[in-house]
Length: 94
Image (cartoon, rainbow, N blue to C red; front, side, top):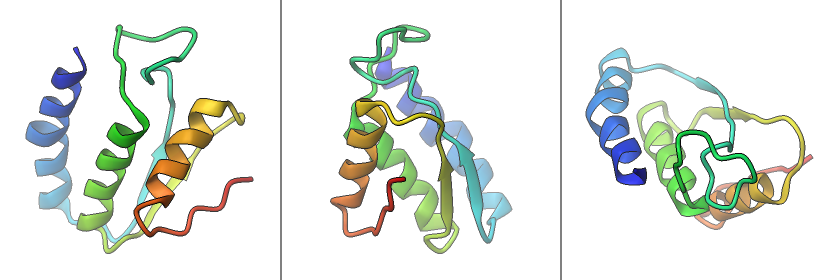
């Protein structure tokens, strides 16, 4: 099921973003589809690396200007952000 998420992301979401060419992207990020989330929606098991991949794809289109807005501070959210931060991006976690 997770491969379907990435297929839709690459073939639907990213072409729209690339055509629109935003200067900045705001993302209301949820982790209900994360691998290990207690109440997974849709049966997805997206890894922290998967969330990082999708975020980096967005960043490549809008000149690295992506704002991820999260609520709460679950270990899965922190793990996903740290994975992205490991790619050389400065990610403050509040």
